[in-house]
Length: 292
Image 1 (cartoon, helix red, strand yellow):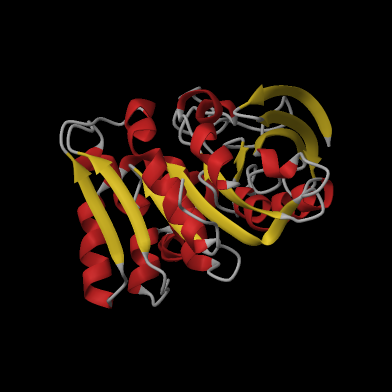
Image 2: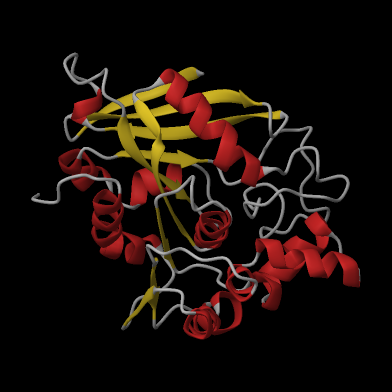
C-alpha cells in the first residue's frame, strides 16, 4: 500500500492509502483513521478493532473523513476507522453509459456483479468482506476479527446486506439513512438491472443483495441492527423505504432499533449529528470501554 497523505488528528493520524485491489482489478484508495493507541510503541503490537464505514452515491473515501466528525470520539474510544472508496475507478473501469450520477463510478452498490461489462471490476462485496480487511491487517495494527460495519445511504445498504450475509465477519452493523429495499426502489433497480441482469431468473438473484429480502429469506443477526433516518429526508419514501425494513424485521423477529429523527435530511449534517451513537454502538460490540 502506498501512503498518499497523513494528518495529525485528535492525537491520532488520518491517513490515505492507494493500493491495487486484485478483487476490483483496479487501483483504489482507502482512508484510515488510527487512534493514538495504534501509534505508540508500547501498544503497536496489540491489534485494534476497526469500524468500516461505507459511503453513499457519488462519494469517495474522503466524504466521511471530512464531514462525519467521527475522529474525535474514535480517538477517545481507541477505535480505528476504515473508509474505502464507493466503487472501482479508472479509465479501464466502465461507468454509466449515459453519464448519470447514480450508477457506475461512485456507485458500486457493494455487491459482486454478474453481468458484462461490470463483473470484472465491480466486486465491492468481496473487496470489503475479504481483501480489504486482509490487506489492512497485514500492514497496520488492526484486528480482522474485531470489525464493525456501518454506512450511509448506498453505504447503509451495503452495511445491512454484508452484515446480514456475513455475521461472523462483522460483529456489529449499523446504518444512517440506508437504502433498505433496493429491489423496490429506482436506485436499486437500476443498479441491479445492470450488475445482475433483468430477466425473471436474474431478478430472483437480486434478493441476495437486498436487506429486506435477506430477512425474509432467513438471514439474522442476534446482536441487532441500528438504523437512523431523518423525517425530512427527500428520499425517505421512494428510495430508502425504512418501513419495509421495519416490517420485515417485525415479521421475522430480527432485533432492530429504527429511530426517525424529526427535521433531519439526507446530508452529512445528519450523519454528523448521530455518528457518536453509532461509534458507541460498535465500540461496545467490539469490546471497548465506553467511559468517554
